[in-house]
Image (cartoon, rainbow, N blue to C red):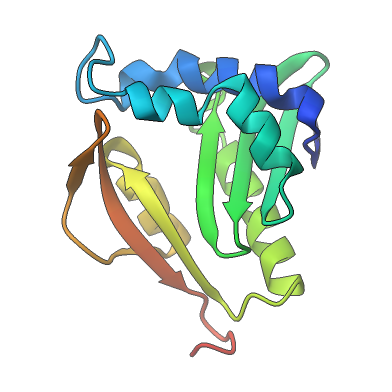
Length: 157
């Protein structure tokens, strides 16, 4: 397995990974109401994000197979963290989060992060140290909980 910075050429695989997981976190099994979300994770949108200066993306792969990905926006918002179904609960999400977090801290983040956690991922983010910062939100066919993290021992504490 290799973890590396993503390039725009990874966008189609990232899109496919996210789409393969949508039944796990959409409000409707058919994806009804999720049109804005689907547009935001299209291959073209992913190419735009990966090429934008305020985004940082990493991918984990085993040869041609994409195992997972993580993305930060504005060096503080955990924009995406997706792990292929067959690779979940094996520590890859934690590994990708640590890489993104450490990169952000090394590049000026004072130790404050946010995430809009899908309802089924709240426990994972709690293990990372995130706490809910607001009530559950239902929007664009998704349900999520806004969460925040202040890294212990950082400049923010």
